[in-house]
Image: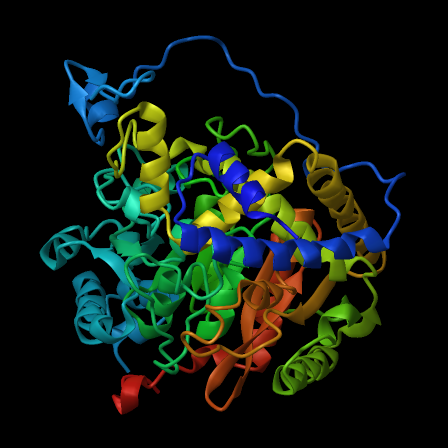
Length: 97
Length: 481
């Protein structure tokens, strides 16, 4: 059974602020899903290779030629806060507004 | 019967014979939008009707056949919300490759259709902007996540539509709404400009009224794209008229998908479909795919894992909704906590957990091994069979609210469609019957790149059993046949 502390730990890894009520709900629902996923223990898969991709894909490279099809204005158009061609965010360190 | 009830290819023929004016089709769809949209709510955004009418060009026939686009496929200048609060004010700055391809043919877009938030769900109830309703019964869900696209095609508020399919999100709503939906072979349709959910599983595909339209629309959107590194450089599918000749074809009925929790009336429709295929000269036998029952737990580890990584980009910095916070990190956590809905949060939590230190091998790596086993089952089956069949959904369209409280039960209803994404295969859903005036879908699955074969099998069935000609009689208000 997933503990509340574990839920808070995942929440921090995911940068996802939850309410106390949500933590309790997700704790129960994640447990349901994870218990169900234990079905995968029924078969010994130690000799089965993992399949990361269904088709034989390899890295795709292209010539390093700049393609100028996205203007600064386009890039900033959806920004919640911008100034002089930059995205503006709260301070990375400390708590001063 | 109005023009909005016809298929694209029927309308194109009428236009080329000059029996109807191109603008009449568009007007018929707009009329349908005005009458049905308040009840169905298939759209999140509808273009100005005047603009849609003015986009019709006499020399470009496809401009007369309105198309609806799922609201997770970018159309430059139009909103793209993914049915999420976090993107509620986002305007797409560029076109998805599939949209570029459609624009080359002057396709006329009606608007952006509703979905489960970020395409996570099977009922379109997870939309932050309210659910879409099933045109066959307004008390029921249209399926999901491409529920808006499927409902729109069924009701004629568009003639055809694009959806996206990660675990059944095109096929299951097509089944629930009595229309046709194709999940193409992974890598045949560019994902550039599709908001990523689970990148190794996502594919864009058509939702249409019949198989011919499906083949036509697929021929327009498939093909290699250098902007998508998983796009395959293979000979693209080109449309040619279908014959429906399936004599001598070997069809495998997947045994495991006809047991566990299936609605008996759905099973009856599938058994009837088997008889139809036999009458058409095909050979149908049962086939066992022993690992297919592990598909749901495998999927619900892999898809959330990929989603938790893909959705990291929604942090309130460059676009979308932003919540307050004293530091950047606090702002990001608050933004995501307030901006995402319950199902998206649940999957981010699940995905982060299975990828976190100490659990990666027990869950994620193990699921990748099962993915291999499941794909292997299909490979083996295709040594003996040309195509495989199953129900698209084991259950009939369910009532709104019926499964919201129990996510696991909702997940289990995806059992028939999920394995196909895990194996990267193409599959089409077509109407194969009605139970109490609710549509039932048949899924036809093929090996990679076998789309043309799927169209032939589906077309053969459709011509013999024309369930696709039925139209919903919305609220006793008769539009259809």
